[in-house]
Length: 111
Ligand code: AMP
Ligand code: ZN
Image 1 (cartoon, protein in one colour):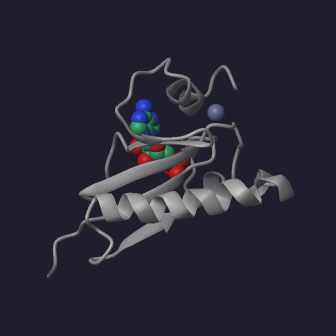
Image 2 (image 1 turned 90 degrees about the vertical axis):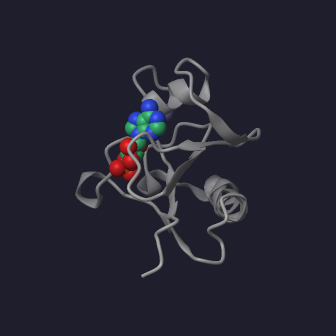
Image 3 (image 1 turned 90 degrees about the horizontal axis):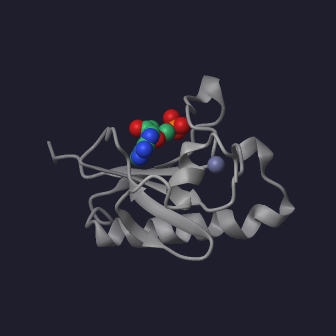
């Protein structure tokens, strides 16, 4: 746990947040500033700074994040219409919270 990390605080319940799903490895909640009708964050409990900091032992958590993302997409009824699973990596890649997270974004209206 990093003391200054907002996502560590959410994971530990220090910042109250509506949790959509959680297990021993990760926590899922809505993005506070959604960029689409469905914008959800899938966040490992363990503090990892970014994709750049992944090690061999993190293979399991990354695949688990994707599998949970798939299930959340189904729960949110965006699985058929389609969605993005996105990692921003470091500042140039748009990352502003330096605790690994995957965005699930979707629910756009059909044109
Ligand atoms: P990134 O740019 O990939 O680091 O994304 C960080 C995301 O976290 C942004 O989309 C923010 O809107 C979101 N965010 C920041 N603080 C909170 C919070 N307290 N609860 C939920 N989402 C947050
Ligand atoms: Zn953290």
